[in-house]
Length: 66
Length: 451
Image (cartoon, rainbow over all chains, first blue to last red; front, side, top):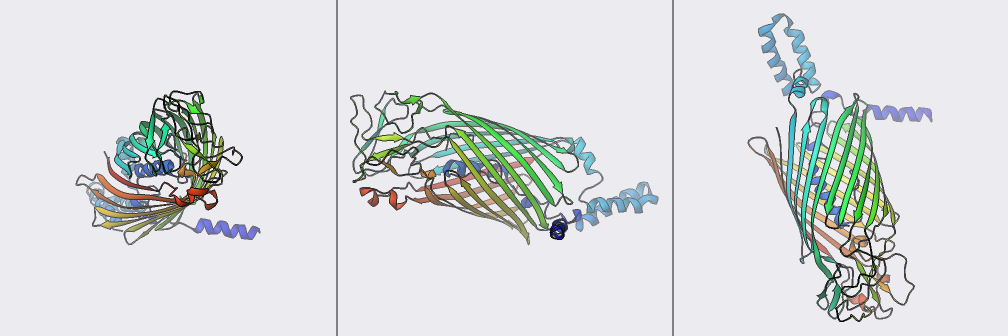
């Protein structure tokens, strides 16, 4: 069991890139949220029209639209 | 590698002029900085030149059949200070008009309803879906957020939010902490948000499951109501390779208090024919049938899992996400979202967007209330608590102006189509179109620049 956990941890730490390999990851279009206003707009629309909200971040809301 | 070569070349020229004897070590230092993605001068510049980031958008959201129309202005200003600290301030103004389904079922004859204010009545033509056309509101929302590093690898965010509508007031606060591990390839985050909202329905909040009354009769109305929402989000993001980044979040959302929609009703129907039981209005006017105000539980707990991947290949970026949500109202939902950013030359792009959403109905969702059966404790015919699928299909075009400002325009279509479970249909209801399908157009123009 211990060996298994050590192997899993070693797997995690070997994943990823070195600091000088981040050129693509640093691109604006590779950020998890590329357009915060558009994401906020979508969260608000879907909060108002569907029974689910949030996921990406907090549940949104703060309006009487639901 | 081009940028490394250029950085080395520039440093070579400047150092060789001043201190030729140190050019080799200076060149190596500059090359190291370039490899690390930094330059020797950059941190100094960041300290001395705070920056501003302006982000503004105009949105039109319009549903067909004269239902909800929203014109919205959003703006977010971010002030960047030294040492990666920043302050963000946001403003949203929404102007809403249009009609929204009242929750009552279609009937073969004209139907009359008392307006939520209780001051007058309105009629719906025979066979048509009852829409309440008194929906008109202006919403103003503000947000403020502060971000700062905590040590070498931590990042703290705290925020405040408030919004005001004619019948609703929201105040909230949130905080989160993110920590980088494993050469910044793994980020673990935890955050919470708390909201305290007060609801002041037009005409007062109705007592659940009581009848819509005659014009001027407010005897079943209560005072203002409130609700609290507590959210927790735990997340991890992981760099997999030079061009693949993934994220997974777990969220818990707990709502307590007044969770009804104070304007929604259900038709009280005959247990055999399925038609709405009549109500005899007084001389002052009133409803034509028996319409009961909805009743939802005063607690709701939602759990969701959200996963997202960003994948870069040959200049194009795929953004894919999936969310599963389940709650103790017995609603389950699945959301799949795909965006593909396709560059057109060096300064513009096209981004198709496809989103699929599906949800099951709440345990207490019902089309109408059967007068021959026992009165349920909870009931709502709000279509948003029903069983439906939704699709969003859209296209965004983004471009950079000559002075490096970002602009984008997106056009999207959103469509919902639902079904009422067959076992809920009584008599004539089986032959009617019961679910208020929705079609909406979304147009958003965004403008962003830094200085």
